[in-house]
Length: 80
Image (tube, rainbow, N blue to C red; front, side, top):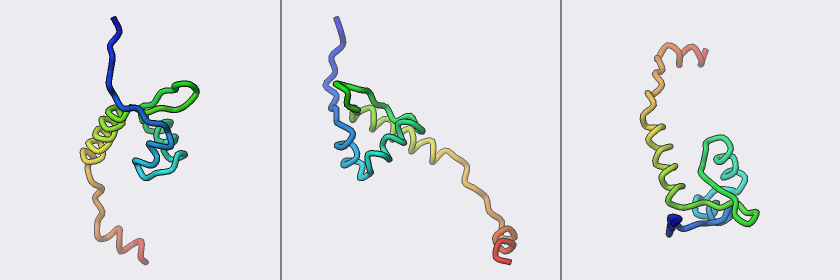
């Protein structure tokens, strides 16, 4: 027997509105950053639970990066 999920699915335009982004920006996230999506009846669809988990992983990846260290000398040299 197949597994049934009650995940909320939204369209590309609905997700763009929720994320306060443009549809092309969302598609770039799909292509370049691996935002999870699938096609249903020829339309891009997104499961909100998967998008939320993806966003959490992206946030953790950003905060785990070591901050850039900038020296005072480098800043002064750029101004000269």
